Image (cartoon, rainbow, N blue to C red; front, side):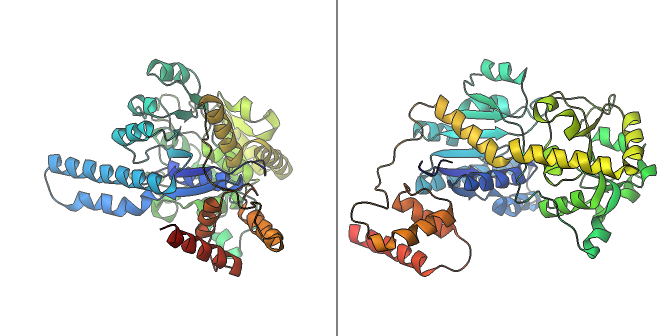
Length: 425
């Protein structure tokens, strides 16, 4: 963000759980990197209560009613958050708990909404009913999805491929203890989709380690599944990437007639592995040439080619390292969450007339501001990633979002805010 432009207020609505949850958190970090004021609606905090409904031993009809009521309560909570935070944009991730009624309410109140639909539109078809209710609809696929969105009334759709977060996905050396747990010649991290189950049975002679969920019931692969097949945290993902000589990256498919599907979208793992400077063998995708040059990734088109390349690259460390280094440079240049969020903001500004609205608030450095405090406040603004043109209310919000102990200046500003509220009454 241009330091002279005012920061936006953006509310990121996370899903209860699932693959778009960590992506939502990275979006929030990317927006903060750009200097915007970001708050997240922490839907995962409600997930345990939502799951507890499964243990009530009630009829299926009552169970569905309770689930719908719970999700409606979450939608109302998002609306309450919007009313308090007054965001310039509500950015929802796929599966965010925001009902159609809530989206209609936000549109009626002229609150700009966007969704980043980071799922395969052919499998997850709920987009057909929800997409027209968003002002901006970002997707990870192109045609025929673009035309399909227009057919259901979506005017503002944008192709926005996935990305990596450089201060989270980066190269580092693991401790000896962690390397013993996560280290491997060849590994795969991801869910046990049908195409992967069949494909990896042909690769276990490489000493394959498998990480992730939904691998239960496969007696051939079971000995290779790590940590009991539990969900792997984002922090553990980065350790696995960095500790593995060859990371396999086979995109998911529910079809088994073609194990290497040759599909269109690029999964987040492709960008995350590259950002970590980790070597990967990834199946060729239709949209890949737009994102990476031929020498920035090692790709395969068939299982036989994958099997051969595993053996080849295990014996050619220098080539592994050169390819990984080039891939990392490309991600840092073009494929960060900050870059994706800037593209989304620019698209929104171009498509939504009058967005963002001008706020009726005074800048901090008005004509009566004490000169002796200017340098100290400028340092605080720089620390918070805020523009000198920021309003006082936004400065207060940014200070309240900080972690750790407050400085004397922080405390003074918060005290002034409380005094102002009391005086205004």
